[in-house]
Length: 175
Length: 110
Image (cartoon, each protein chain N blue to C red):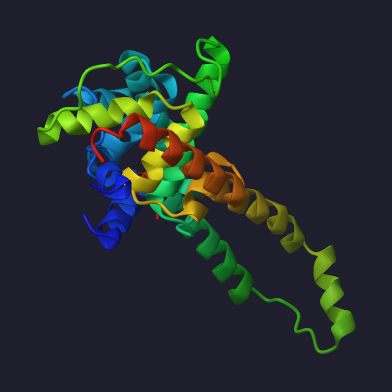
């Protein structure tokens, strides 16, 4: 789906065609869920948070002006929804560091290796995990990450630097 | 392998297979307001207004030769028509607003 196609679907949703929203959900569901999972760290709760975010985005779609990428706008909603859920549940304090307990050798197969790296990212503090996810997996710029997370651009760069350093140690076996 | 390349190779996590269906089922249904003025009534009102305007134009209205004379119209019965027209316009505007808000193009009187 190109950006023009996406705008056509957004216009159709604004005109009351709710079915057109399924294309948007299909396109962004994986990344939105990944962001939620990196923050909440519970698959069921992350899925609920992603669902809630999509519903919020649908309700507020008339406020999307098209100045930024739709994905940036959507992921901002996902990020804020997850923050709100975390604050409500207080299950996991923001930026709590988890210990890296994996002592097994790193896998060589592509899919297994992807899971291994994803797990290493998940072990990072949530803000660092989000920044790394958006920067590498979604190829967002520092400016876009700053918009999504509300962090300053300098802070985003610091978070990226710290996360890279930690991952270099954790993934030393793969490098 | 480079760390950047390694991180870019990670595939995003996937929610459950029926995630899209669950989202689509949970979307709020938009409230629909029935139009205040039906299509038939709308055309009737338009016809009445047109008739009133036509009557006022055809009837013997004193020609306003001087700007001062035009104020004499305020003392005639025609001035009573103005608030009625304003009220009808207001009702039609409210109807138009709600119809547009809900995207009910077919239920618009005009």
